[in-house]
Image (cartoon, rainbow, N blue to C red; front, side, top):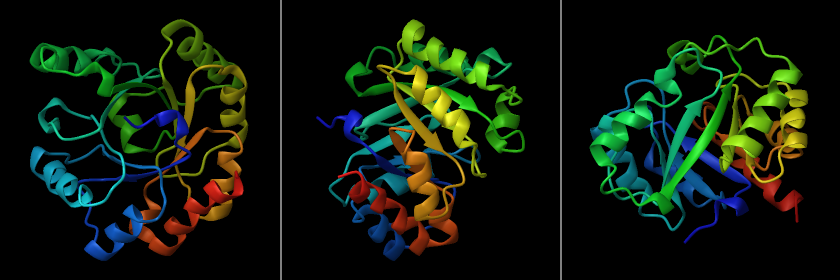
Length: 230
């Protein structure tokens, strides 16, 4: 069984976006620690299974980040389930999870499930708008959310998500300082090795997504942060 605590770098692939076989091979053979399949819009059973079958040719951990119940299927090593802590809509706290458990609770292997405490911070992002997230947060808010995740909910992952823009490292550092057991993921706007290195100084795991589709060479350079930590 894979240990997500060891993951420093993840590529996140959107099933609704197109990636060539050549670029997918480069991503999967890049020494990244894992691939997450997930997105906000147009995530369907068909495009998830198509991308999963392509990634499965390569020997690395594969996770599905669940955005709707309809696209959930067997065959992944992990199922990442977000709860958007700063959402004003209870659906994105536990409503989708409730529906999933009613449908699939009897067949779920909970050893494969990773519950993520999300804090969404880019107000213009699709995920912030979809979940009605309160994004004008202070450092104090971030610290309190980190304590909530780590000490009270005891979730395995806290995910600071800027989704499309590069975030404020001070917020990431503030969260990191409060966490003792929970693993800190950062995602958003990592477009270069320098971006990756800066955020990896505070987050346990960086998640690289959009740049895969914009500049594959820059995306591949972000994996080098693993060498810098040795």
